[in-house]
Length: 87
Image 1: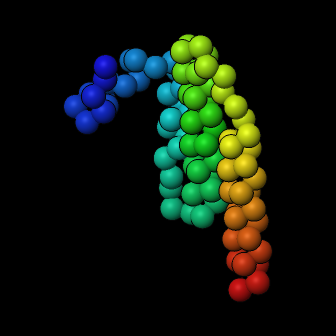
Image 2: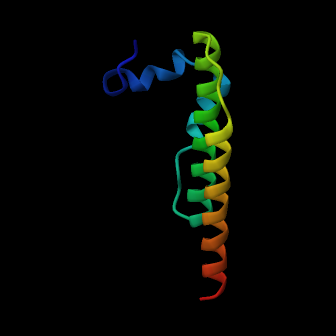
């Protein structure tokens, strides 16, 4: 087990390079576009990790809730963009 606080600087050693880069992509800069990009990167990282864990534990990862959350977030992003264009 890797304790996040104590060993987070070593986390890179315990996960795949692909997962590490996905994790890094969840960090945000200062722009709204960057916030949305990071949010969807986090959703993707969660999805990939959940599928991996479910497979390893012999469970089926159902995509219904995943798809609903993604559609909802896309909708909110669209509303935000429309609101920004109207101001």
